[in-house]
Image (cartoon, rainbow, N blue to C red; front, side, top):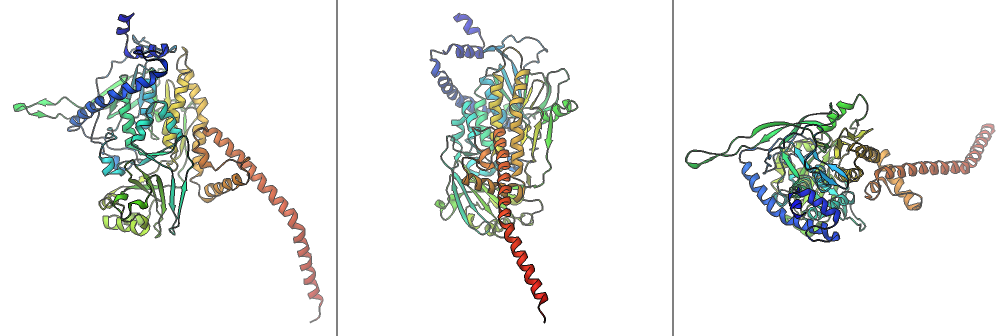
Length: 596
């Protein structure tokens, strides 16, 4: 048995150890902790080696241009490291058995292709590796971000916009064992400080929660998950690799990949090393499962919609953007100001422009105590268009946001002036299904919202948790029923989240007035009415579908109460109105009969 154990694949040994509760003599209760400690110990050496290889490869492998309008320009070419693409496994004939398929709780798991190496895709890859999938491959068309410990996150905190990770997302990160690593590079967010157009200030502190909200740059969050994913032997990550086509003609996904890999440096004359240009490669793969996590412009979702659109199985509902918003980023360094203690480092700031620029500045904190500012404005904003030089950009901020005067680094104004306008995504969600044949979609592929309240990344992580639960339901019956369960249990959550978030973009009557009504009724009748929609969506223990049902009930009751109140008021007031009318009529008639 000892000899056979040494011949088994590593993942099979781990799976068998999980089943018996023993691995290297560790009791069942301490198995996960022991494996986590071992992985962390290996991580440092693994990541260091990879980064060194990436630095060498970067000498001749450039970064891939950023193609999404959602991300700021600082992400374009912002990476100084690239991932070399290791040799690809040979394609397996359809239906051919795997010689080292993993037996995990009665479920056969083989190869998976994750499209997209953002936070959602990497979290999904880690989850799949932990669930016993033999081979998890992640492909990403862009270059990787720099390591989360890179000094650029301190010197240039705006190199990537900030994300707020709430309890909904933290719960899943904790399940896959990376939350503590994420928190090392995140700032705790305890509340909000606002300034209106007249400079009136207000501070709102959140109640202590089981998961306190944290803020972290998107690139940095991706970097943390990337380092964690690299510690798994059954995860392969290929950056600069895109999906050129995907088809389900045979009933299973057939994916064509294209990208660039580095050639081995050639030794030249007198021993000099000559960097070779990147070499284009292409291949076709037929994984057992595809996970689409490639954003709101998802290649997987578009292909799936075209493939099954006639049958109506998968469809993206896209809403017209009736309230378009553009943005630019700006860094803030409170330590360079006259009074560094004037700004709390655990709050996010929101300020309306005070000089008529019609711009809103939102600032989220970083782990180093700095801030990442995002200016939001409508297309054609004259003040933003006029700030096309460093001097004019400085004037824009000092006259409209004087509370931040002196804390914006001098060289940041040149970067702001040269930035192109970034467009927030439009609202959309997947209708009817969240999957196709042997294909599951997560994140912005199936629900895209504007990042007003941090719902995007948190709902994407929740998708990973739901998919994990559904994958565990498979028991020798294939992956089809699992994906059916994923759709049926989660599609209404995706649709409800987008529909409710879209109301936040609706102006006074569809956003402000309902918030006022919810706040008023919940205070008057706390046992009958729930809190407002924003707070409802941020409750991590409450599914979006249930939050939507509660708010529909609340809205119906509010309308009934208002109508009943108006009816009672009219019943009480109408006799008085009739009496006044009769008296007025009599008075007028009396004056008419009086002789002049």
